[in-house]
Length: 279
Image (cartoon, rainbow, N blue to C red):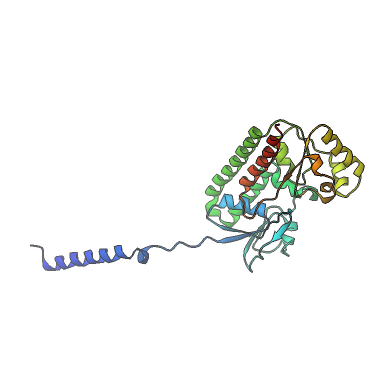
């Protein structure tokens, strides 16, 4: 026979286990919410979001409008963590470079203003930007270094695979590249794309040397080249490109569109337009 004190102890233990099993919320640990970080540009936000996964809640401060303008969608709260490309980008939100909770990828970005719009389309630049992003994120959450490094490798792998899709998708035909930002990404998959010299481009976007612009478009039409432009193509140049030039328009990304989905859609839009021509 089991002693009475032991019997009571066993009954009490069984009752306690029954109660605890019926109330899991009472003993389950409540996970801490992921800290938030506010990111100045949509491209930078998309890159950061890919690398951090669920460890940080990334909040973009702006998105693209249909006509390619950056539109502010929120102001960073007081004492919030903010990520920006450089002091010039931070200044759009009246943020001073010495702000304690501001993380800059570059203190002095070694790129001309005329190239800023194409940075996130340029395969020669994107690896450096993503590495700088890794450095910033690890300063914020050093305990996640190994995870962020793996995600960075995945980011670069996705970039290369998306490019390979474009190269296999797009035919080797000559086109005239009149894009304002997306040109480097397009030319990476279409090596026969023709781009006007920078000296002419800078004149054209100011509305100068219009005879040369007319000649370039007339030559493209004569050779049956499609003319590719995007929403960032300067207005003086876009005004000269008509339906008669068989243009292909690369649109701006939709709000919250994934970076790689958009890059793939750029290739898909060009492929769709060219296949209609039977090229």
